Amino acid sequence: MVAARAAKKTQVIVIDTTHTRTTDGGCWWEVAIPAVSERTEVNEAFERYTAAKTEQRI
Image (tube, rainbow, N blue to C red):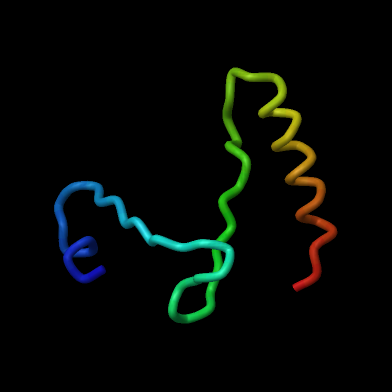
């Protein structure tokens, strides 16, 4: 992480994980549906995703 933050170019960080092995901190992150696409089904999925986000509890 230190090297990636210090880098002058874009870096890719790969975390090897499975359904039984998670990050050390027990954290997770959300990878959302793309907001821009030429594909109708992706745009429709993004609309459903956005609508569903308003129903999430914090």
